[in-house]
Image 1 (cartoon, rainbow, N blue to C red):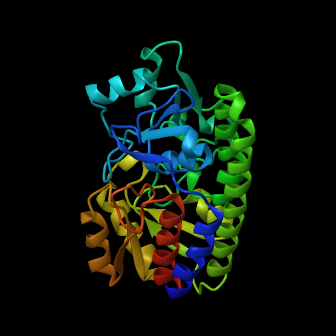
Image 2: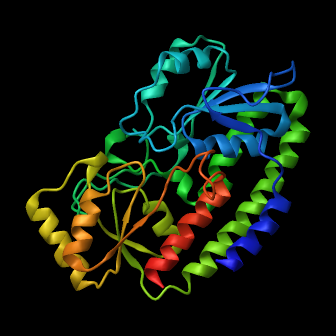
Length: 314
């Protein structure tokens, strides 16, 4: 853990101060050169804050601890979008609840869907990884794909950040040089983050894990891990008794010592399985939040999850 903390200091030198605030408000009263940006989830708002710097006032809609799969926005959040220049959401079924809000906010609002041009992984419907409709592009139903694209740092570096950058430049072309500098620095930091994660994962003795729901596919694919099963299946659906029994058998067979739960969902099923199998429940967090120490930036969030995985798989 000390190595992660020391290494994080290097990252913080590479990356400038975040220009983002929490749910329901902008970071400062915008001047005539500041873009108002609203994102659906915290990780996106942190990315935008880094790329926009002091030229973007950023807020996000989803409160810490809430699940984007089930969240219902408030009237005040709907009003928030009427003041925004740019609205950024993941898409692919994760946060489409916000799209209707954004479309109702007026024609002046620029809407950016980040999953639109990403080759998406299929989302598991079956807790044991049963066959799921394929998903190589947007021609498939949103509900068949995994939207958790921000959990792969190189996907963030190579696809997500450039699209956010392009949207910022389009809205404020006079600040293009400033945004380019921010993008270059952040991409360099993401490269370092990827190297840190890859180096740590290379030391894992185990590669298979059980997670609460199908959120870690992009991370697993990038770093050679295997999401052997999921507890809740498709979009939080609870498994049947036979599926729980099959998961328990898998955990024992593969000697999986830890089961990953998430703070956005109840841990009851994970704890039940862990008690039956003699495993430990550890908390992975795909979302983080500004008010959560140790998970209050994209980099901190990724390092937190890396530390949890190291504890489980070393």
